[in-house]
Image 1: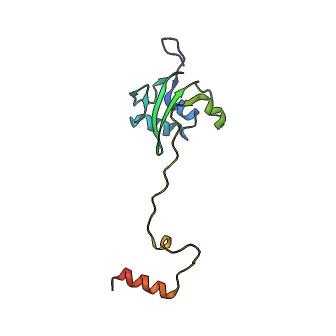
Image 2: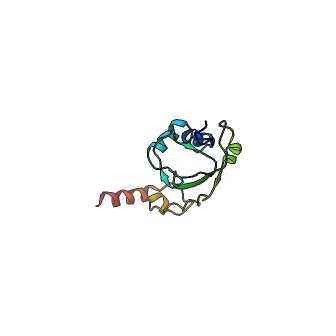
Image 3: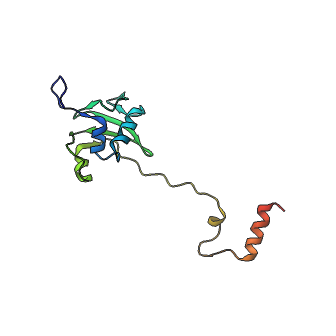
Length: 131
């Protein structure tokens, strides 16, 4: 597709799908229509908006905020190594923080002790019932 200025462009939902950020074009269109995607700092809400090489996209993906610079426009949805050539990740995702420690009966027992004995089970039942 070409716009009046002569620079080639591609629909943003199609580009997100080609670059393998989302599993389907309809999911890409939903992300764009939600208004959570920014194109060069401006919120966009139409999946038909054209993107060009050099544009910067900012959008949430899972627990991360992705900042992507478009290097090339896609021609097909190829394998992941081919899709990675379409963009440059300006802010690589940080590693996930460790899960919060939860205090449960199973985790409070020492490792390797196995199943609770009858005596331990009765004691736990008594504590839970509040007697």
